[in-house]
Length: 398
Image 1 (tube, rainbow, N blue to C red):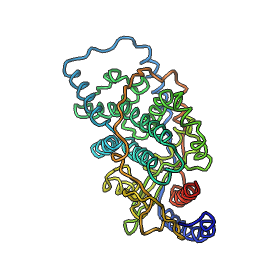
Image 2: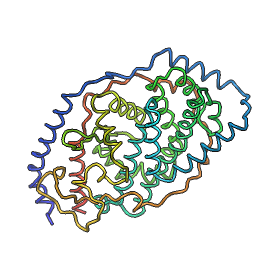
Image 3: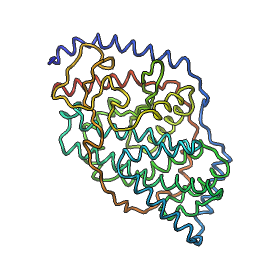
Image 4: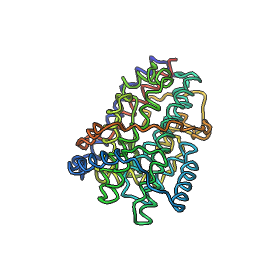
């Protein structure tokens, strides 16, 4: 077992290896092209949305529901419940929907973000964090992630299925949205998308909707604020930019690198929306990155273990001690960080979904449709390796 002093001595060797990692990053990025230099929603679209929101809010009468429509509602409710068992089932459901309806970009973005949610949950049981978190803290952090994950699926998946049915019948069925307690904000959004097929508009709208949906239910929840968001470890992670959203992509020789962004202020709803928009612009706005990310997603089953993307570092088998190498851990050839499959360490959690309130209160939210430029820097492999090194060091001295 290496002492902390020896770890510090070997740090220069690790940094040299990380420099090589950086060269790979720049080699890949230099061969990419930005098909979206920015995402800009037409003013005519947002003005139309604003008008439709005003008209929709002034409407009191709800349309009559026919027998066939009741069957549609029941079927969607059943399928949503079926796939909302855990992070694994949700993540797979998003990807399956995207494969059938690739014009709904948000479904693929949600699939990848949901993968991150699963990895974060299993991190809590891995041997890197076992010395940093008590059992109660592990449970609190997991419940925070699980609740947000489940709530978003509960709200978004019925919308996706209703679009699927509308597409199949070649007519709008979005008047049924209120039967799933979907925000009034989304009715005109889906109507506009169904007619105009603007994938960027729908994706940004769904990002806005889902972040507002969890704001009161999760972010402002008193228990989660006290046990998670205001905890020292969570604040330290944000300070050190430990919180990242990763988009694994396959490049030459079937190696996997990581694209993504760092989350600096998770408690801010505007920050979370901007992060979603930046991730979206990276995911769909850069060639050949979208193809390389899709290659990973379509060929790699999501288990919740980080060994899904880095088998040379992460192992689904637990070892009592972490052997610390003198080399950069990201170049390890023997997996040594325990990252278990999610179903092995966390049970399914029942959710009530009892809050039926509508978050939409007025047109100020339309400011979130502001233009965003596609980041020129997107590869975070190097910074994630540094994160692992810091966490490894912190874990070893406690």
